[in-house]
Image (cartoon, rainbow, N blue to C red):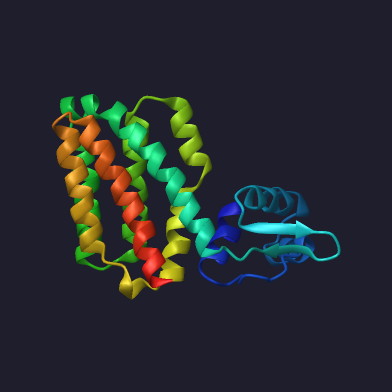
Amino acid sequence: MKRVLLERILDGTYKPGDRLVELQIAKELDTSQAPVREALRELEAMGLIESQTYRGTRVRQISPQELQESYQVRAELEALAARLAAPKFYANPEPLQTTLAALERAAAEENFEEFTQSNTAFHRLIVETSGNSILLRVWDSLAFEIWTRINLVLLGRKIVNLKLLNQEHQAVVDALVQNDGKTAADLLRSHVENVVDREEKLL
């Protein structure tokens, strides 16, 4: 249920400001109100919708500043993950190289949907390989795949340079497989911050 409503927000079926009526959604999807209510709670916790007295539940307008702040937090989380994960990727680089290959295929085909999914897998792999379960839990809770997809919509797909992003990904991989955690952390932080810098020039 959450996935259905989330997709509708991300693909523009539900636009910022649109009201989400629990009963109406339940009837449309041929379900009870309970799962709809729970899904709306989860989406509100993620910051995608908001509930106000007398106005009901509506899709939130995500501001460029909010997107930028999410990337600032992400930069620091992933820099820490890179330092912790480097020795493990040095011992077994194959998973990292596999995810990078998927990113390169998506970029070559200009498949933004596939790139977004592969990008999330790439970054999450680094966090997961850090071995720090709390770090992974925090990273997951911030739902970066969703922020990335919102970001692509806001910026316009044609102005996102996928090949440039993959050049930065490659540099991170090179450092990780050489067990250079400090360089990998610096590169990964810069990679995420570069996204923010590019947004500030375009928005």
